[in-house]
Amino acid sequence: MSPVPTPQVPQYRITLFYGPEPVAGRPSRVRCIFNVKKRSWKAGVQVVIELDEQQLANARRVSGFEVWLQKVLASVPVADRAGQAGRADDLFVQGVCALKLDLAIKAGLRQENQSIQADALVSELDGVISEQAERLKSQVLADLDLAGG
Image (tube, rainbow, N blue to C red; front, side, top):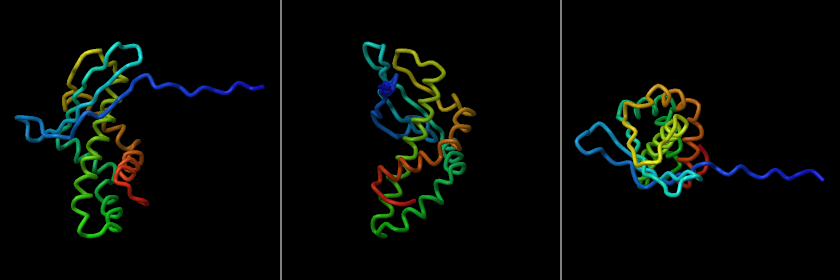
């Protein structure tokens, strides 16, 4: 009898707490806040992930998000498109923040509440956006409960 492989349990449990929202006093920045709990930690921490508008514009360009979203929303009733487009943009920002959080975890996350500033992990995030573009768009599509894309 061959052993049944057990699924690997994720080392971290990550939950979006809220966001995106503007950063106070920094109009060109947005942030998402995540609850992060490592299996070996007794308690989780909150991690703030900041992005500036230039990073988001680059992420949209590299991933082809704007063109893709226009195609996806073509099947949505005209009256609903603006609301769906706004929601899609929020979901995209959350996805980019989650990618940056993954990078921070790989770099070594401390067990304390912390903030990853917009100017941290910039080149690493740029590199991962193109690799994860389809996954980001698939997540947006699923969260909008739309088929196709």
